[in-house]
View 1 (tube, rainbow, N blue to C red):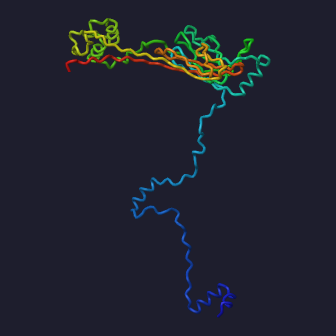
View 2 (cartoon, rainbow, N blue to C red):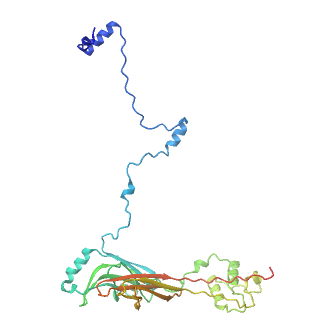
View 3 (tube, one colour):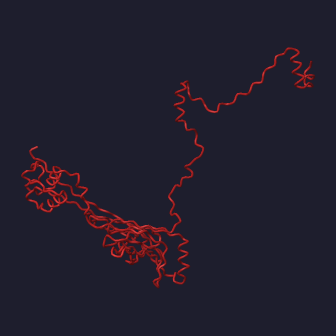
Length: 342
């Protein structure tokens, strides 16, 4: 039988012919599929393979880093002002005002819009204890500058409650409020009277030791106020230097030495702008060099210094403000006196 004859037969006829002739046919075997995962056992046991599989997290399906913003947004699209208490005499306010709010203010003020000034209005909202009512009292208006979004506000007479409104003030005295802040209360100035719990775990021996190390048992020092403070807080009398168990090591040396040591600090503020600009630091004018640079030295006492720097263009159209906040905290430690015989 030729190949031409075989092609003329159907599969069923060919199967019958091969069966009749006794020819064995090859069974159809499925094509092996590629492995779904690479074998990484490398001859390890089944238990080791299971243990390793716990740490196989696979290939990430999404690149989440592409969706993470590189920088924080400049704002959140809300008209708001937030006030925080820094200390009994200073508040810090920061705000965000949208363009829509400015447009509403312009439409509301109409003809008065020309010449308006951005204002922070400080209000005293302290509650009257007798009537339990709060009367809003305008303390003052603070003119702010375009482009800034925070301000330090000095206050007085703590403790008091305050609120700050931000808006535009027209020449006729009309004040359009853009946003109102939260109410904050400044703490009482000075040392708190509620300190008894801080002395609760000081036993008699430890109290005498603290009193002795602070110079309380030194007869050459005026320690009456210190002793009264300890006895008032501990509600018991303190021991005397004659019965103290700390000896002379806890007392200051009776011989006064002439050795001394002092230190001080100054603040140097420097910057640059257009040579024709007008610059002020804390409201005082600053003389510019021909190239527009300037340098100013300030004394730096132990406190927080707020230094607003304002630069105005020569034509008066543009003004920029930078606020420096610098704090100095100097602490003098107790002197160490060593025994010359050692």
